[in-house]
Structures are given as structure tokens and as C-alpha cells.
Length: 77
Image (tube, rainbow, N blue to C red; front, side, top):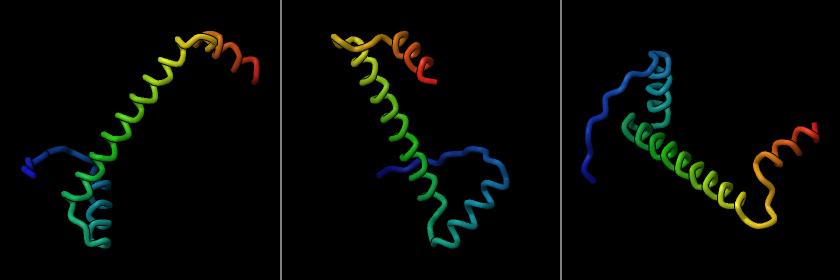
């Protein structure tokens, strides 16, 4: 797999924490950063899919509108 350098800025304390953890666990900084990015991308894609699914359900016959849902949740408080 081809790789590319990625330059970014993070708080000094976060970098120190990351260096310590990598050292303790025997991991490389590159590995941990790449895995963190992959996890975040996966989470964002999953969130998009869930939102799309929810929006599709709102138009199904018998489903309540978002406005009705909000009104019902206010009544439950």
C-alpha cells in the first residue's frame, strides 16, 4: 500500500500522551494515527447510513413525521 506523509498540529499534551502510550504498547505513531483515522471515517459513514435509514423510515406509510415525534417526546417529559 502506498503511503503519504500527513502533517498536522495537535496540542503538545496530546502528543506527549500519544508518545507515552505508543512506547508502552510497542506501537508506532503512524499505526495509531492511521487506525484512529480509519475508526473515525467508519464512525462517520455509519452515522450517515443511520441518518439516511431514519429519513427513509419517516416517509413510510404509518410512520410519524419528525414534528409529531418531537411533540410526543415533549409530552413524555
